[in-house]
Image (cartoon, rainbow, N blue to C red; front, side, top):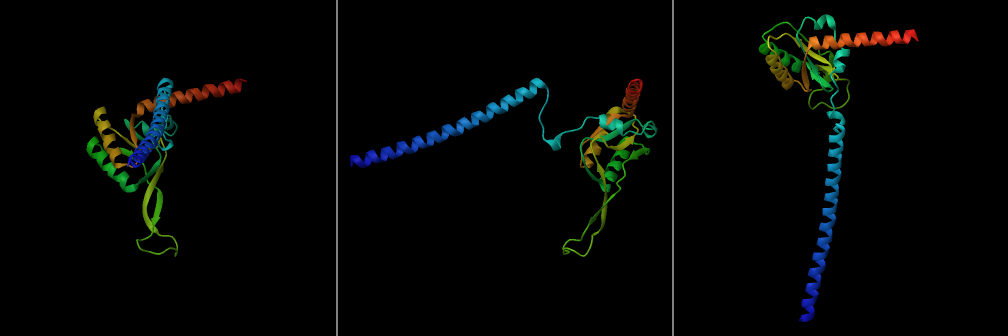
Length: 202
């Protein structure tokens, strides 16, 4: 009888020891993960750089300056541009245009044109037998592409219009005044002239 009790106690202790070792290993791995994550956060906080995924990165608004058209931009006060890449359907652009017209209360605006055709076959059709029929058009945009230019009496109202437009589009959007963009464009032009003059003098 005593031998059976001692066997049971030994098994119980061995099982508990095994679970304790397993718990210690899991705890050590968890502590190591926390240590690494804390070090990464401190490094990003000290250096001022935050690591993000590639598809989440946003290009700076300097891309907008290079693709601006000064003759068109001088006619409008505000510009909405994209922060990431994507394909915008023609129906999405039209929905955003209607919202922008309703909230800004102006008819005069410039909008992006969807010029890339997309074909699609009917549901249930088999493979082969040529290309499908034309379904819709999309605008292939990259970060910094101009979507809308419009006039608005108030800056707060213009920001609200941009937010409503962003809800209708499949990409992130941001508002900027065309005057600041034109100033940046002029500064870039003068810098380019200075650099070219330096190269010619050499």
